[in-house]
Amino acid sequence: MAQFTVNAYRIDPYKNFKFRVKWDGNYVAGVSRVSALTRTSQVVSHREGGDPHSPRKSPGQTDFGPITLERGVTHDVAFEQWANKVWDYSNSAQLGNEMSLKDFRKDITIEMYNEAGQKVIAYNVFRCWVSEWTAMPELDGSGNAVAIQSMTLQNEGWERDLSVTEPEQQSFTIPAS
Image 1: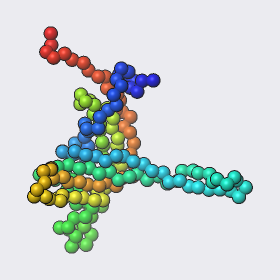
Image 2: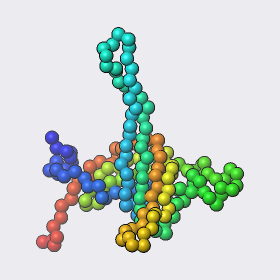
Image 3: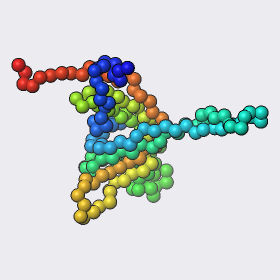
Image 4: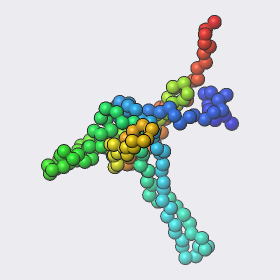
């Protein structure tokens, strides 16, 4: 059975290095890593008195794991502005102004692209808010790495965007004859 419907000859799964993150209708600059989308359902065990020795199991509450976004430190303030909606030091002394209740949650979209840069899969993540914010990473005078900011987002669920379908893969010849 073919793994791809439009491009039945394709046998390679998509790579994990082409992606973009969007919130407030805009792509977020410089995101270099997105953690996995995970969902866990608790197991509820129960047994009636006349049942065999092993209990029956059914699904309980479902929890959606946090998502971590990472990017190199730049002058773009989008990460920091969102993180400050949950708690802002400059407003913390003013009672009632330390949290932006109206807009601290955002829906985000995570898009994955194939090697040619065509969008192939997208997930919408709902009611996210920043639970952890690393503005300045550990610094090391003898290091040789990019300084990384990170934010951890709590969320209330996600679903695949079914309007994104498998694109027709293009072919070209360079130089053209």
